[in-house]
Image 1 (cartoon, helix red, strand yellow):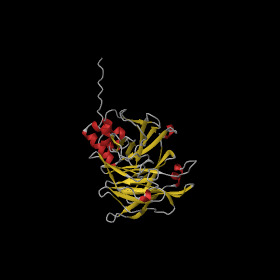
Image 2: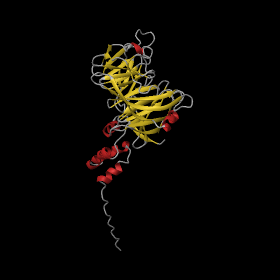
Image 3: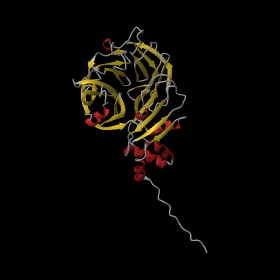
Length: 380
């Protein structure tokens, strides 16, 4: 008896709006393989990211042991898909000293013999150069255009606590320039100063007083002092630059009772070089203020890292929670918080360093193709 022949209908391919809608729900890290399915899928991925679910800046947390060999683990949080990603790096990257960050995605390590730094979005490439001429314990270090500025933080036996040295990435050489303003003599260290940078200027602010200066790399000149204190009750503030916009985040009240946390955009007159306005962008909801409070110290200080339209705000004394502030075009903020997946394993023998990056699909594809790089979605 002949067996019946069963005809299976070929399923209709998925394309167009339906495909884009499906792809918009896939984490960015998992979209990379779909780029190579076909030309139409590649176009659908880019169309979906452009119109349906644009990527948002990743929060990247580096946890480093404080003892040799200073083992470091890195995890990134993707706010669009709300997943944590473990980022494994080659063993060839040696963390010989304390890992530090400056605002966005600039990482560095400074020892008496070497300065190591990385400024690409996912810190795939590290540069290793001779250390500055002066020994420094806690300087401010910032990427300004194609230069690295190292200022203040000198050891006690050095003559000038305000000394500034600049490394040219292009010329691979150091040069000295005018020292920091004398007003900063007692606070010339990253502990007391907040920094922000555009491609042309370095901004330096005293965290407790609001006294601010800028340094122009082209003219090698320091500006006069400006007092940026939008609210006279602001007892602690930090600054950062995002898309060349100077952002200030301040604590209002006192250490024992932080009443408010506010965000301002600081306007700078390009002709006079003065700060001509502070526009309040948003106030952190009380729920998120409480998330930053530690049981012992409340909120005595904050730090920020910025990328794209996001400002991530955290309390160095309590790294379990990070508050995210999304700056809305035209004014205002959207607020949220991220539970730090790294904090569960952090103890007194580890330091935690925060960066953030506006990661695009092309950059992530290159990172995944780099030798000995692994990106793995982890459950928390």
